[in-house]
Image (cartoon, rainbow, N blue to C red):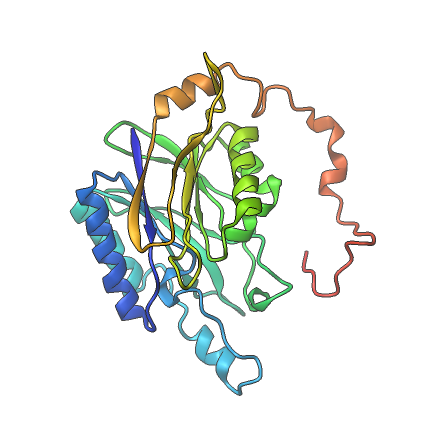
Length: 291
């Protein structure tokens, strides 16, 4: 079993408090036999932005961005090594021109495997102040059970099938998804579809109520067994602050991926040229869209 701890929390008003709280939840995750701890989106400042009508607010917000060499990231790298626990850490990342909404995957030895920046920023809203990411990443995560290929996408990324699809094509067996919005039936159903169509396990951590509504969730990616259709849900949280552990049976997933019909076996990519077209037509033209 690959045990993913969904750290469903509410955030504090400052980075030091969020660091302390996040570290405490990681320690709690380790007592629950977790192999990896997954934070909600942009944890270091609690998914906060700024009032565009307030002079200097944007600059003060951007000044909270941190780099991979920061004390915040370094603390969790040391904690990962101390606890023998992989950590998927999220934060507002310092970047030229404008910050990024990022996740760093830290292995149980404290090494950084990759830093992923949210590709599908919500440009129709406050995330227009962010720099969008330019690629998706997958890395072999060393675990006590052997290497597992892990990728990441963030919140709005999961609403585009291309995000999970490219991670699957890059070899992801497990996709981690920090979140910061209401998880209701449509978003949860959409997320289930990403697991089904790619035969990948997916794990998503949301903010607890009242900041969001919780409902952090994980699917194991195995939609059928010898008895027919099955529910892929491993765990779905309620709204509470808590560590919820999703146990993914990796060998079962790998066996399923070796013979079932979804994923990459029967795709016809030669017919998909339209998918990479940059043309936009009505009713989808938006003045604030960034390509």
